[in-house]
Image 1 (cartoon, rainbow, N blue to C red):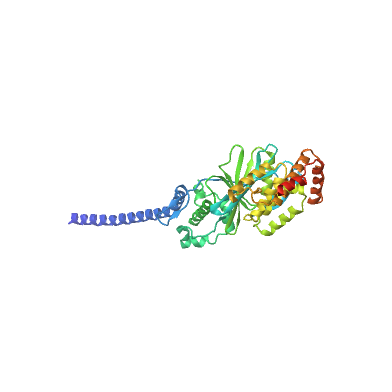
Image 2 (image 1 turned 90 degrees about the vertical axis):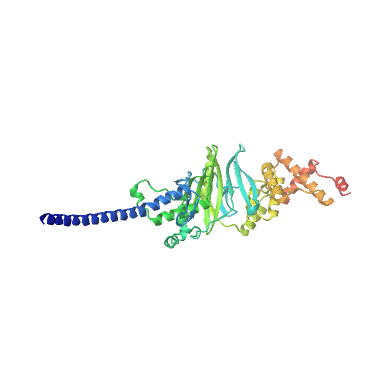
Length: 434
């Protein structure tokens, strides 16, 4: 009996110990499960986030399709020269409204010459106007290209992930100006420090993906460095297309849901180029194109002296005027006609005539097959007059004379033409008419 009792006690004791072990095991397993769930909730979003940055997509739960993230260097926009004048008289520069921008530009500079370079994108119905500035060595020191505007609406309805109610609510609270700044300045890589990494919430990670989505929508693949210029309120990109001789940068200015990009090219190791680049960025402002400015610049062109009309000042004012009416071929034709009357405009004419042929199918020269006899006489007389003007210029006669009007200038050179017997006599005119 005692054995049985003892055995019973042993059995009873062993049963007690078994229940305690089960409770401990269940408690341990529960703790492991809770910790596992905590770890998953804590680290899975970061792991998923890093996966999206590397692959550009995540399709297990809520589909997101974003171009994979290329690590970019962010820095402060460098503008080296605080002295705007750089020791130059301000009369060499003018602040003009060209296209959708207003900025400083050489208007009649002793060093810079303007070379307009145009191209037409048929599918976008857009004319890219490039202003190239070259110095005495005929090499381009600085160029500005006005690229087609881009639409960039900040909306959460672009990816399913952003439409999840809890994320959508937070994203819609984001200030659009802050989002625009973050596109060019926010570092999307997670920190290596665990302490810093743990500060990122799920909302932070989703917002980073939101920034990445719009960054990829806006920027091209040839991006080396991104910057935001707070003082100038512009996004800035240094391109990988830069060469050992030139730095290529892109500037972006946003107005509502439209982004206006500019590509600038700066010649390296050249003080003139660097100063031009800095002055351009410091003076650059967005000013949407309007026809009133076209009329204003054309009026200015008509009031300047004839010798300026056929030179750099006249061409620059006509280009500024035409930039607000790019579909009006009459402005473009007038630029060519005045350049043909000037001296030393061969480079400019070659570029513009090439564009005229490609865009309009014409070089805008006189068509002798369609002119009347009297029109031909007038053209030939004008041609002889212009040749005489060129001769006078080459001989450095009257180079510093200031004419009060175009008529006064023409009268002067007509007298010179008669003296040198270069005008067309009445006999020649009669022959042409006959």
